[in-house]
Image (cartoon, rainbow, N blue to C red; front, side, top):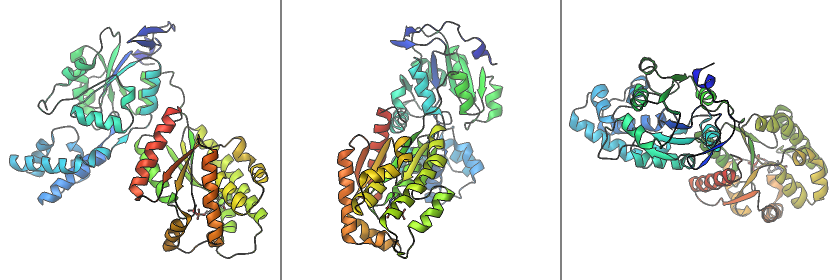
Amino acid sequence: MNAALMERPQSILPQIQFGRVFFPLLPYDVVVFDLDGTLTDSQLGIYRCARYALEKMGFPVPDDAVLRKFMGPPLAESYMKYCGMTEAEAVRGTDLYRERYIPIGWKENNVFPLIRPLLKALRDQGAYLAVATGKPQKTSEDILRYFGLLPYLDAVAGPDDSDMHADKGDLIRRVLPKGYRRAVMVGDTAGDVKGAQDCGIDSIGALYGYGENADLLAARPTHTAEDTQALCALLCPDMPPRKGCFITLEGVDGCGKSTQASALQQRLEQFGYPVRRTREPGGCLIAEEIRKIVLAKEDGGMCPETEALLFAAARAQHVKEVILPAVARGEVVLCDRFVDSSLVYQGMARGLDAEWVKEINRAAYREGAPDATLYLRMSHVDAMARRLAASDPDRIEKAGDSFHARTEAAYEQLMRENPDRFIAVNAAQAPEQVTEEAFGRLFARMVERGVL
Ligand code: TYD
């Protein structure tokens, strides 16, 4: 067992500290994190911006092993050291880097897995949390805000534009609160460890970050963490298991659900969530077989009851085999269509009794209700024109204009009946705008409900 765990205080009586209830079972009451390579994986944005500048200046782009060395030290220094630039060229290279970094590059970042639930659990147990980073203060705050991490933090310290060579120890001192008992700095470089030693506090070397591990270990951190799972075990031994959630996407044929589902998956993964993307009808072997029958291109004269039962049969398998287990593992399940599609298409549009449709979909109603449904709202006429431009329609898409008009009206009715679950987004906007709005609203709603 590691030292921090062995020394855990035995008292479990909560105390008031830093103006809130603190549970003394946490090994540290103050945790200061480095940002890049510790909370977030910013490699992609940094590589792309460095490449952008090099290409614009006509310099050969070094391979990824060399670009990795750009993580951490000042950029101009790396341009001179690894790309043979003069000082003036390195200044120009830095300006060009910013030309891409400021509008786009800073968002090309991923929150490491488990970081969000770790911050939440520490905060819920009363710890004081801060960031001390070599990245400029304003950019750091923008990144933390964008990725929804800022609300968990009590303080952020980074250099301002005039003091780009700020000392890590000074940055850590700026965020340490008065009256702390056990503080720790978590970082992926030797500089983080030395900064902690300078302030007389413990340190955890994040071996999963970008820092050279040999240097990091040579600085003798108090503990090391191979990955974020190990970090959680060190900082929050009683961390509750990660919660999963179930999100469905709905809308008339051609409203752009598949495009949005992949964009949302990417966004959720960047935010550090494990995502299980799936679809209906389908999502597992048996349900995909049923899909072939129910969405055949030729009309075999299938009656509405058979159609409804086939969708329900595929769903029962999908709920039990895929959706429930993934939610139980703590994943975010993102499902393209679900039981609302049956209510809309088989119930309201084909005219089957809604109660019967609900009855045959018990598996979905009993255990598999979605936490949120993103409704991509669009006129069925525009959506069908878009759909037909893409590929041949299936049996249901060929059902005719009045059928699709009924699906649109039915979605509008379901939206009005389920205001707590539905999030309606105008899907006629440009796809990037739809994603922006859909993700923003979904994330806010899920956080507010404590689901994400
Ligand atoms: P799909 O090719 O997945 O289309 P889309 O991209 O629009 O989702 O086909 C799914 C079709 O099946 C779609 O026309 C809606 C229909 N459907 C139902 O009628 N009932 C249901 O329960 C489900 C899940 C889908």
